[in-house]
Image (cartoon, rainbow, N blue to C red; front, side):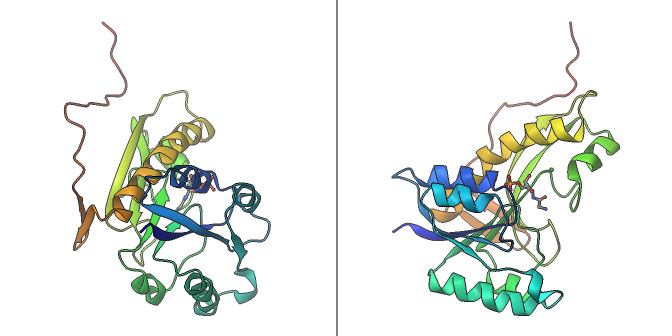
Length: 218
Ligand code: GAR
C-alpha cells in the first residue's frame, strides 16, 4: 500500500512538482493525495492541478497570529484525505509545537543549505556572506525550531567566487529536486529510523566520493 502524502506549499512549487513526478512511478512507495496551499495565489496550485493532483487552499492570513486556529482547518483537510506523511515544500508558515508533535516523525521539510548552517531567511545570501566553498540542501524531519530537526538527506554543490544568491539558488534547487523524492522514498518505504535527534537510514553514504571546492589546477 502506498503511503498517502500531502505536500504543503506557499509559492512556486518546484519541489512539489519534483515529488509529484517521482510519485508517478509505479514502484514509488508514496502517492501525492493532495497539495495544500496557505495562499490562494501560489503558482504551484496550477502546476499540481495540471498534473492531476487534488489541490486545497487553506488561507492562513485570516487567522493572523492565531496559528492553532489555522492548524485546526489544516488538520481537517489532512484527515479528510487520510494523510499519513507531510512534505513541506516552500511552505512559509510556522507551526505550533502541538501540531509538530502530532506529526512527529511524519513531516519532512527541505531547506536550501547544509543545515545546521544558515537556517531561516536568505540562506543563499548567508552562505555567500560566510564565504563557504560548499553549500547544498537538506531534507529533515520537522521539529518546533525553524529549519532544524533530524537530517534525513543532504546534497552538496560547490560555491564559486562568481556566484550570486540567484545562481547559487539555481544550482541548489537542482539538488533539492533530486534529494526530496529520494528522501520521501526512504521514509515511505520504512527505511529510516529516528534515534533521538539523529535519523539513521539503511541507505549508505556514497563511498569514496569527494566534493572539493575550489579545485586547484595542476
Ligand atoms: C526551496 O528552495 C526550499 O528549499 C525553500 O523554499 C524554496 C521553495 O521553492 N524552503 C525554505 O527556505 C524553508 N525554510 P519551490 O516552491 O519552488 O519548491
